[in-house]
Length: 249
Image (cartoon, rainbow, N blue to C red; front, side, top):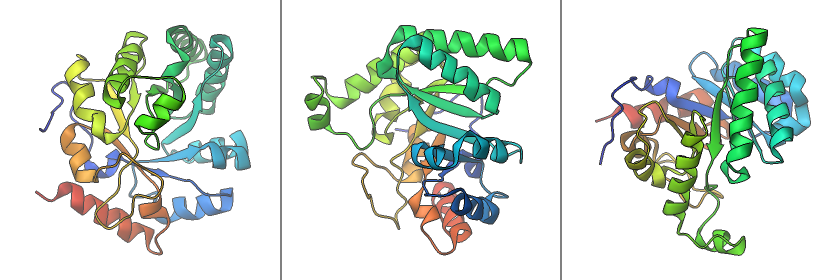
């Protein structure tokens, strides 16, 4: 089933791809950015690179007018997450995330504090999205931590909570896209999907995966893709090959 958004048109295919800079050093990340930044819509910095290179590297990339998704998945007491989120907004990132399992108060306070700080300091407000269930997780993973729901109902429950708390969208496996679209009324609610594997790639450590074309047809707004691009000798060719998969009827 293909689900379409009616209010805002989805971006062009090349702008839907967020390339994950899951590398060890800033030097490696710069090399990737230099090779493909003219074609790619955005890049993602996760915990590994953020820990290695720090906030100064985030500022360096943002200062080049490159859209950046900071993927550090905040999950702490509400006051701590809200204050950290304000600092992220000051870095100038386009998007960042937090764990929806942190609860409603944590998410609401984060949205409020970021909105207030951005208005007061005349900053562009970043997109704030909630992480639902990690794509490396399966039914057994949820049971280990005391969650008895099946994956899809749990993802939908967390997506509803993030929408209620005023977040811009969620990070979710592509397998739950359709269910989220059925249950969230807002057509502007973003779905960012990791677990994307083109036909020429392996699944690696992802358990709930889908091809880029299938994910877009289901209703994904943005696709997070790392190793199928960054591990290739010709990264630009790999990126363009993925675009062809998405755009081919």
